Length: 578
Image 1 (cartoon, rainbow, N blue to C red):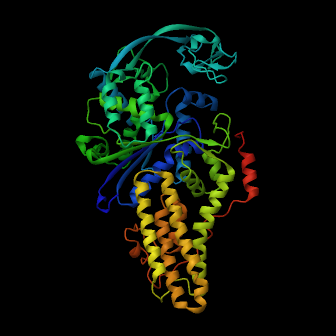
Image 2 (image 1 turned 90 degrees about the horizontal axis):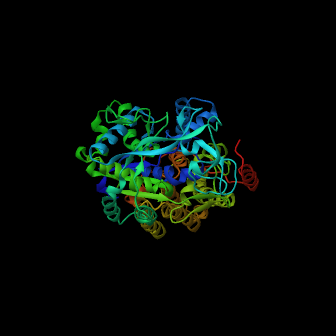
């Protein structure tokens, strides 16, 4: 981002995590963490950022998770939102607002969009047959029906898919079907009416819009095009369900005849929560509607907003097709996304992370064993951008020990300790910069400009590699000029070398803050400064801490991971979650 872009406004949304449990590291690196990296970077460069996330609280899995926990669904969701918000906070995720899709704001906006789509001719009422449980007195969603799989004989197959053989099923395919709620086999097929979003009518408009996005990642556009053109192409989708928990079906503020007792399908209301959460942010601060509408309505100032979404690849169809169809179909001037950064999957030690099997590391457990920055650094520097990537304990140990402890931590420790023992705990006077210092400034300038380019382009791994190279340049300089040797013959020159190195610690803290915010804050505290000025001019930046500026030697920034710890953790997370 150019320096004169300080008025840039950037809206960032991360795919909203489902409410039914604590997320694993694969979920974290697929959306929230890279979104946070981008938000922190742009704030550091002077942009006005609105970074939004929320919990996705409606739908069958929320009801099932609540009943398993023995709690009313609204109580369960409120509790889990608190848990997820707390973990996000401890991971340093700098959301401007972490909302809830069950909010009153989202209910109203969802009903508003449905009413607009109806009046624009994009809603159709469809009669369909669905399984009704007499014992439970309700229609059962597909996954509330269990039975024996006709394909493999597994006796706990669900009405939408058999977990055992992965075959897609319809509830009527099951042998001896029963209600997952009560176990009752007193089921019958009844007719019920549902609303469908006529996405197919918007196919050409969506196609043209996606084609115009030549700068999007191939992963994003290829998934969208596949859904648009493969097989029958883009199909209309049901947007209502016979459930108790969800946004009640309404036509704006009015009742919708024939839709009594129904709710909107979770996929319809979840992305609308991005907008609603921004209204929640404004309402919580006592701001008027202009405050949130200026981010979302092009007639209220959102024309100058750059809107970026972060998500795992499984969320791409909803964000490239269904949510844009909702926005386009409304006929109102809502902001469409400018860039979608999608990620592949992070696998765990030769297999997949599994929430149901407790396989892999979950966010709360990760923080129990190491501070957030260790995880942030490894996950971002190994982000699954161009292909799936794999977490192994050996790789984690080696990355933390080499990058964080040996390169960055070691630099901070050597420089501050040496200065403290040979001069004083203050920036020393004397000497002048020579050829070697000029060469370092030139090298750092090239690397920092490259780092900015990668960060602006959301190339997460390239950004991490460039930051690592910036840290390494300081270490190589230190090795080469060896102030501890220079000191014996020319203490003045050693003072100049250390003066540069102490200033470099502040520069490292500023550059590294988007990746490792806690360690960055420790470095700044150690250097006794709150100066977070970006090093636009590297030579000037290396003089921000003047002669005589006092500092303290920081605690060890990063402790090394021992082989014993690595083995213990590998064993602990091999497949059962307490």
